[in-house]
Length: 173
Image (cartoon, helix red, strand yellow):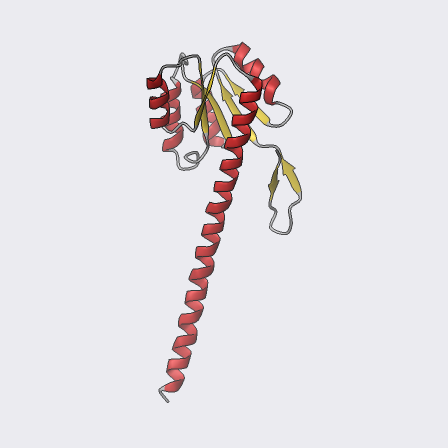
């Protein structure tokens, strides 16, 4: 699922979506890498703070985040991500061995988009990552299109006001 990067003239480059994976268990990072590396550009972290620092400097397209982390837990990491305007709209999918409803409620309340339960199931990982990236790219497109339309409307309104001024100025003579 490559994303077309617009250069202003015509689409020229296919860019693999960037996925940041954060889990303190090396075996989970290796499993996720083996599942996703063919389709996505991956950045792996075992410490939440390192992942946050990287994400602030290089916003990814999607984040897979373990809940139970030794330095900063996934809930707090997600809160910090969502507090940053550059990262607010990036989907966060929690990775968790917990299956209690309160963990999911808490995750959604801090901004999670979805959950993937451990043990990791490759087809589920593929499906959820693909789905949330599609949603993100459509939402990005709609936001950009909305901004473009607002700018066009503002320009048209300005031009209409100028024409009206000219016409009204001429009819008064």
